[in-house]
Image 1: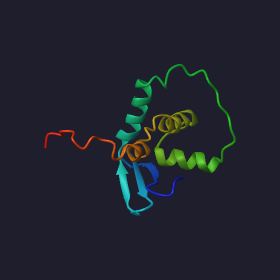
Image 2: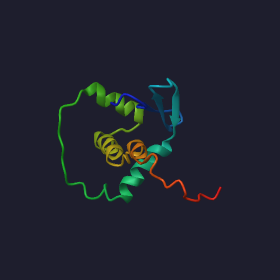
Image 3: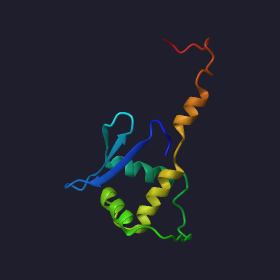
Length: 116
């Protein structure tokens, strides 16, 4: 976890079956709701990126059952495989926008005409 701007995300299924997520900014202390669309977008992006091809790799590890059950409860994902796939897709698709934005700050030519 980094010091600034890091968000903690908690997701759950609402009574209507809609997957929702709350992300809490460490700085602001406020919750931001994310819809089921986030889950679907991540999985669709992973598929389009060729990350969800043939399932021939098997992984194993020792994980707290409480962690798995809480993650399933919060995401609405029922199987271990789908839960792991969603978590890995989130990591694999991270675009590192914040770090890239900071690195490029001040690199645009000040004479560039932006149309306004």
